[in-house]
Structure formats: structure tokens, C-alpha cells
Amino acid sequence: MIVRYTNPSRIRDQLLHCLDVLGEEYNELDYVVDVYKNEDRLRKEMVECPDMSPEEYQQILHGATRPPAIAMMESRTIKIFYFNLSKEKHKQDLDLAFFLFHEMRHAWQNHHGLYLDEEGVANLDENMEEYKNSAAEKDANEFAMVTIMENKDKIRKIFKMPDFELNLKW
Image (cartoon, rainbow, N blue to C red):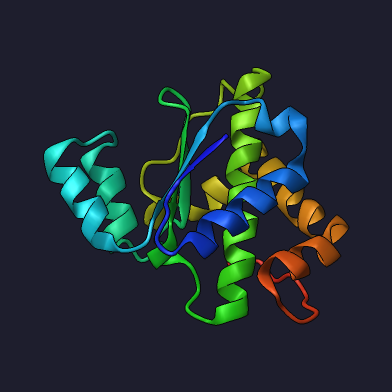
């Protein structure tokens, strides 16, 4: 597993420790986790070498619902949009772990041929209920929440945080 982000290295290290929590089955999926610290890099990518649809870029950058992460199956990349996570310190850390686990679950689903018949939702602002109610999303949300709660002490140690309750904002 590669985490492509080094500034600050703290975030990269936290992501690598979170990936360790998932174990071999997930780490062997051979995905790249790519963290976008701010919108500038995503805007540059959108112009110079886009790998998502214009609608997806618009949703991430300007949507009322701005996705914090996306799993791209063909390129085997998980993009985390750090700028779309909560701005509160410990909530931001929990979001980072939650959405990493959530997107890794999508990678796992894809690897095992699960939910391949489900169509993606292009516009979350107009189709949020459909998105939240899809079997793949329910599974990924549950997996992320259970993983965090079952590994609560490890997560607290990784992020140097106090005790917490997990409240999903989506």
C-alpha cells in the first residue's frame, strides 16, 4: 500500500498506521492512497490531467455535499480530499480514519466482485438519499464505523486524541 502525501508527514504516518489496523487482506489490495491537502492540487489536476468527470470535480469542489474521499477502481487509487474533512482537530482525525476505511471497503468490495451492478450516483446534491441507501454505501459505512469502534484505542493512539463517540455527518 502506498500513501502519496508527505507534507506534513504526520498525515502520511497516521494513514499508514490506520492501514495497519485493516490488516493484510486490505493492504494486499495494492491501492494508492492519495491525499489532497488543499483544492489547488485538485484544480490543477482537473485542468492538466483529469481522471474524473467534470461533474465529479464540480461536486468535490463546489457541491453542497462535498465528498471527502473517492475510490477509483480502474486506477486503483483512493483520493482523500483533506480540505473537505471537518475543520475541528479531533473530528478531522476521525473523518480521516473513517473515510480511509470507508473507501478501502469499496476497494475490497470491488476486488471481491460485490455490488458491481449498482450504478454510481453522479450528483450527490440531487441524489443523496439514493446514495446513502445503496447497499455498497451501507456496507462501507458500517465497516468503517465498526472498524473504528473495534479499534478505538489504536485510533486514539494514532491520532493522540481523547475518548470519542463516532457521529457520522453523512
